[in-house]
Image (cartoon, rainbow, N blue to C red; front, side, top):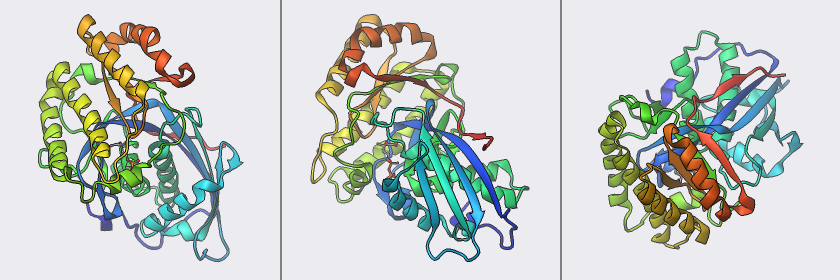
Length: 363
Ligand code: DP6
């Protein structure tokens, strides 16, 4: 598939008004996307577990305009209330996708979005938010073209979501999603995420992710700025190469269920991501003292109890604690006894691998 394949045929008959709604989950990368080229093309491939509990629900009410809008005509509500700060981001997104959804200028939209996780949890909602919005918009196209095949719908939704936020393209379908061209996966693409095409051992099904909310405020440096700092970064080339290699190594690990090898790659990826931040110009640190405390305690517990528990990080101070479902009881006990004390106000979210975005009956 190329970009051209996502331009709809001309002459589609859109309904004059209606409402659509989707719920899309967040995701947690195991091999991290960090660095990009223009048009949201990733500098390296990545792979993520789709989450379940952490999700955004978005509805889009649409009404045909008498005259096409010069720019775009929309209102944005967050949890039912107008939220101006999101408007520029959505305008940029609409600008990027209008050639793939040409009806965008012909309608007025009321976008209403809500997150399942607390508003100020420090969890990035851009992946789930952009995925849910893309699905809603594509649903409108589908109403004009009901013969749209499911596989194309999923692929185009991921393609559109990527243009909103790179990692959002991994929040459309379920379980394990890979994004970014890489030699070891023939079907891989820079344009959209794909379902991981190889065998995955039972131990990686329903994998648990307890998200420890170490710092709930706004991040000091946004992901977009961080990606930009990979340009001219002294370690960029070997880092990008390492991501390809880690994806290739994960193939036999996912098949065999080798948790020790899995943990080594996942934790190394998390620390490498932060090492890239610490070695960019300007350099910055997003981990907090409690992030390091938690990592140390996970290592101690893993060693002393022989439990296959590990951590990963996103671009912030929060820690994602990953473990197989079979270890749930032991790990939750450990988290409550030893880690919750390092969370802001003791807050954490129990999440797990999920099945992907779902349509909602719009009311
Ligand atoms: C560290 O997808 O948020 O979470 O494309 O600029 O919106 P933009 O960036 P974004 O970056 C995610 C970075 C990451 C790693 C990952 O999810 O792969």
